[in-house]
Length: 403
Image (cartoon, rainbow, N blue to C red; front, side, top):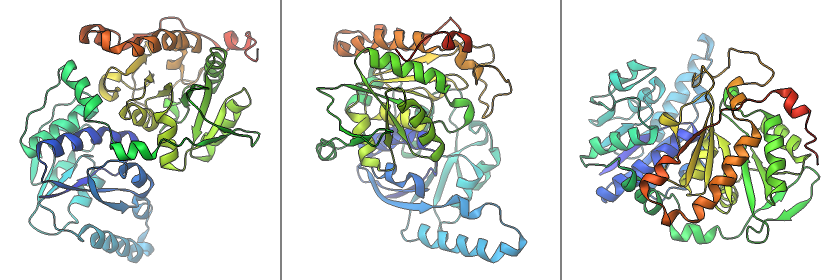
């Protein structure tokens, strides 16, 4: 049975689908999975051992067309149709639930089961459900990765469990996206370029390091740079090297600003080096964004900072992860741009000051070393942390953080 998965973006959404693919393959070994995804994210999909073929899609080719570009538009559609029809599929699963992904599912020819969420299960673009001939109800309000797991389970008719003990067992043993051979190929560690063009060979045994994810899919998700600067300094004072991966130009600028305070910037354009960097880290600290979820999937100790988004909907999986959740009055707002202009922007992170975040990190890391001695109930109770104290820009400026 050949199945096409349509999940075009973003990195976090793609990572949330990995566990469902692994679980489906475990229950139905004869499935051959192909995946249609934006070209930017192809290297990440390649990490999953159960994906046979990847079909690159460039959504930007279909944006902004005027009447005089109709020929070019249909030319690009024809190219996409050709790529999608190189193989014959028994089932198409639209795991995205957007009109663009539903439209792509209709470009595949033949009498195929086109399966996706029903209208009640889609939060935004409900009309996408009209493109499917098999609609599946998956209740909203649950963890994103579990919703995809349930979608796949209903497509292939098997049962899944959401109990904490089963969830963590699956996370550790079955959900890793790296096979043993792949793990062995990533033993060699990458070089990190600092802002002064100095190259240091990373050795996590002699010089343990923490990766801080400063990027975000939208402005409201970005932890303030001045907070990251203080958090970076606290980690360095505790004996850790701090590494800041960057991909886009704006991320590079932010990472180099932190590099001026002792952190090292890292070019994340090479996926395998990035995975190696994350896999060998003592811990990864980041907001609710793709690289943070990727680190969590690699079973690295991961601390997620949640301001405008909800840890109950897009939280990290397993007990190797920790949520630090804002208690700002309008959080989570799920806005891409904050409507409030405050001295700390976005203001929901005002309740997650770096001193308190680092206290949680220092308290949490020793727990991970003794995770086997903890009960499921104990670990579950430690999952979320709310920080009460707020901090102002004046508090930061009054501290000599260069020392």
